[in-house]
Length: 155
Image (cartoon, rainbow, N blue to C red):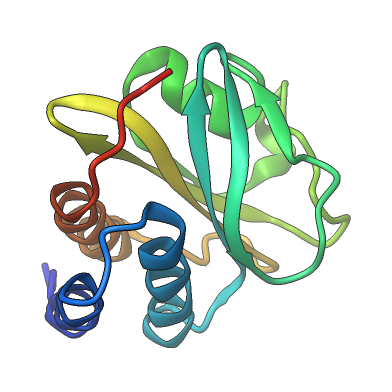
């Protein structure tokens, strides 16, 4: 398994020398992931605020899903179960929230800061099975590094 997240983590660490502002670092993360995983059609960060996820920095088409209740869709399920999600075909997910009609696969990786889940990285792709276990491993390493650079308390 190839799990090299070093280029994205180096970019994040360099930006963290300038700021620890979560949305600024999040924008850097999203931009770096766009280069790292070009099969993604949409990449964003959702912050956990109480019992809902609130959209933060993202890259890709606008989405109407700027707030997602915990337990709803792939993103809300990740928070409710406390587990990352890797979905090969979103059409097989009963409570899927369609951000765009052509999205076929999704990956959601939880972000923790100080041992608490504070948000997630969400990636969509227009092909079935666009993400694999190697991609999940890379994004997991990035999420762990990112969580260590920010100081966010869950609300």
